[in-house]
Amino acid sequence: MTVKAKVARVLSDYEVAFNVGANAGLSVGDVATVYGYVDVNDPDTKEELGRVRRPRVKLRVIEVEPGFSVGQTTEWASSSGGDQSTVFHLALGLDRVRQKVTGNPSEQNRVTVYLRAGDEVEIEPGPKALE
Image 1: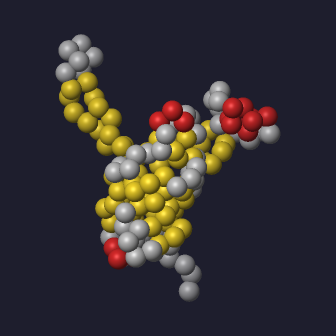
Image 2: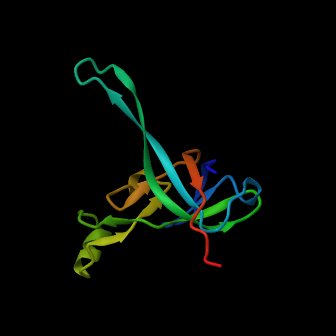
Image 3: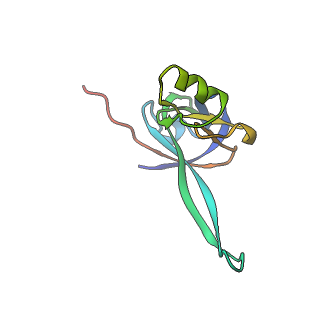
């Protein structure tokens, strides 16, 4: 069962709060996908042709309260870029770093995804623990 939600707040570089929790049937281990929209315009007329919905980041639910939940990034991103953090990672010999999230658009880069309160989220049941 897919649960529709929204980003409530970016809590840290790796954690996001969602506006649904145990009351909506969520459990620790569920997988959340945050979506964004990209406008598609005609290159000649500049007329808006429509919008395309695309996944922006995946998170695993790590905390569930009755009315909200918290997800943590699980994906890896290429660190080949030019900002300070990726230069540091390359100096250590790391070519991939854990995906980050931010609520500040100026911090967006190859590794960090900008999320806004209200962004659409779909949460799917995660893998069940072995019994």
